[in-house]
Length: 136
View 1 (spheres, rainbow, N blue to C red):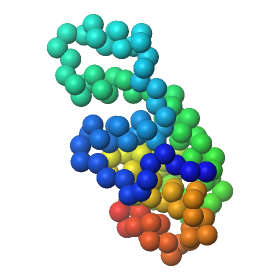
View 2: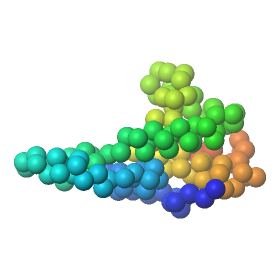
View 3: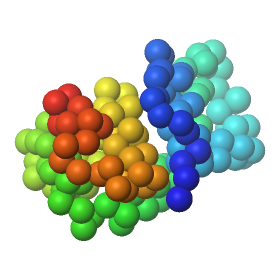
View 4: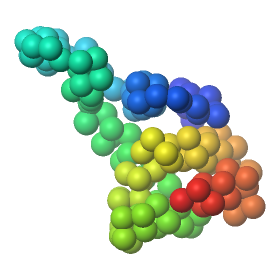
């Protein structure tokens, strides 16, 4: 299975981050009814407009897909638990949400790419794995 994005993931703004997530999660931002309603709001700034086009169903589906692909892997479990600990939690579902945040998504994506496309390199000595744990 190949990903749409090529690592490393680099973004320098909220807009770049949201664009990256939309591509990765296959978000559909062409909802004409929603776009029409948003356009009715007076004096809406570009960032707010962009945020209102967020496709939560696509995000949930992508997170579910990733979790289903990784839930039985001990290294991913350690990543999810380390991420969840940021919110004083031990729930893996909280961990995956943390991994999709601005600060951690590039590290997450690099690991996921190795896991999907270079499984023979996926181990606790893998540089991407060590890097994400160092940064969590």
